[in-house]
Image (tube, rainbow, N blue to C red; front, side, top):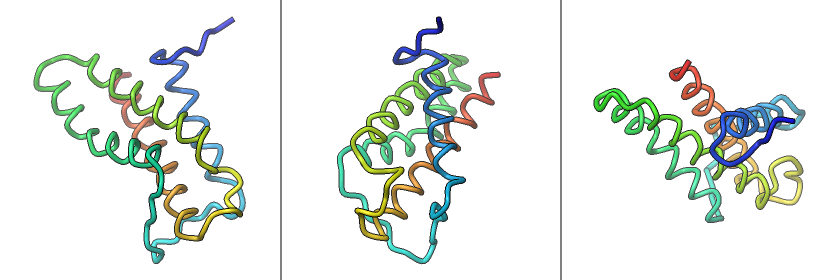
Length: 122
């Protein structure tokens, strides 16, 4: 049996697939006209980690240390899974349209970063 532990490749893949499965569902279109509204520490952790993506790639390249990308992806996957657990993402009827839109954007952006990071490593 495959163990899905923090930091493992399957763990990162699991987070990416989890995010991708949310977006094609009905009522998951992102409205660019709505103001973004982030309310939780889980959302802020993802935002801060996503902001580190370009620097993680740059450092991995300049220092010839590709493991930095894996470490970054593991951190992002951990924050995403925590966000998914603590913030409504699949049942967004209980939150405002701004929060719903903001969370869907976080899911989309996180999924994209995980996908791009994995592609770089392959």
